Image (cartoon, rainbow, N blue to C red):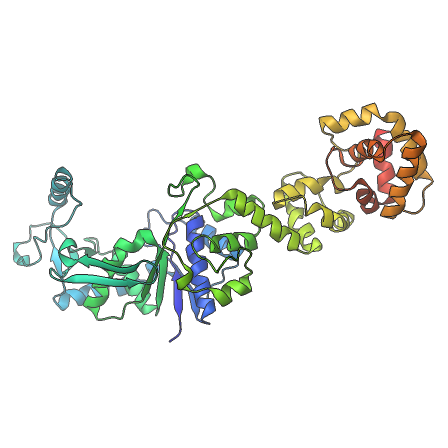
Length: 464
C-alpha cells in the first residue's frame, strides 16, 4: 500500500510554526516510505479565507523546502461531493434532518452552561416526523451517532483512545444553508484523496472519534491516526503571540536558514537517539511515527539560533554572499556590485564563524561593500581621532608596500609597531576602525587582503 499523507491548513492567516512542524512530519513520513505528500487548503470558511493567507502558506512551504505532490487541492471545490455524501447518509437512515430553531439551540447551550456541562444536542429531531417541522425553518442534517458501545481509535502516538458513544451527540454534517461542516468535509476529502495516515496536532484528538463515526457509517476504512504533541513556549504554556514570532515568514525575515528551521522543528517532539544535527537525507531515512513522543516540546529561540549558526558555517561562501546581498540592500541600503560580491565571498570564512543569523552576518559584513567615508561607532571614531599620527605612519608604510598577502601585511605592521615601541594591537585598533568603522571585526590583516591595496589605502586616507 502506498503511503499518502496530507497537510491541510486553513487559509485564515500565516503558516504557523506549529503547522509547519505538522507539514514537516507528514512530508517526512511520505518521503520515508516513497509515498505521496499532498497539500489541501481547507478554504470552506469563505468569510475568513483570503488569497493573502493562501499565498503565505504556499510561500512558507516552499521556503521550508516541503514540496508537495500533485496540484494543491482546495476543499471548496468538493462541496458538491460533500453534499452528496450527506444526502446518501440521509437516504440510508444514518442521518436525519434537524429543524431546531436558533432559539432552541441557544436555550440548550444556556442550560448546559448553567449545569456546568459541555453543550450536547439533545437529539429531539432524531426520530421525529419531518411533518412536524415548523414553517420557514431550513433544516440541517445531523449524523445518527451510535448510542451504545464505544468508539475506539488506536492512535500511533497517543495510544488507545476510547470514548463511550453516549458521550457523543448527533453532530451537524450539513448546515441549513447547504454548506458542509468541517467534520464531514475532512472525512470525505481524506477518503477521496486516498489518505493513509493523518498526522496532526493533539488538539484535533477530540475530532478523531467524531470523524471515526462517519467512517463507520460510510463503511470506509479509516486512515492511521497520529496526533502529535503541541509546541509550548519556555514558560510551558501553549505557544502564542506573546512568546514571539509564530509565522514561518517571520523566522525567514530574522535571517534563519530553512535547513536549520527544519532540523529544529524535527527535534521538537521527535528523536533519533541523541542526534541533534540531522540532515534532510538522514531525516527521510530515519523518520517514523515511533520516534514521536507524547509530551509537549518547548520552543527555545536560543537553541534555534545556535543550530542556525551551525548551518551558516556549513554553507558555501559564495552562497552566503548571495544570501545576504538582498539584506544588505533592503536593511542597510547598500548595492552590491561584482567587486562587493567578491569581497563578501573572500571575507566569508571569518565572517560566518561570528554570526548566528543572516541578519547578523549581513550587518557584520556591510563594511566590505561600503564606500568611504564609512559610518563609525563611537569607539571607532575615538580610536581614529586619538591615533591620527599613527595612522599617517601606517599609510606611509603601506604606500610603498607591494606584497599584499595577509602574512606580509602582518609582518609590515609588526615591524612598524616595533619601530614605534608599541604592541601590534595598538596599531590594529585604529587600523580596524578606519577600515571597518567599528572596533569589532575579523582579523584586520585578512580585511586588508580582501579589500586590496587601492581600497585599503583609500579608506585609510579618508580618515588619516
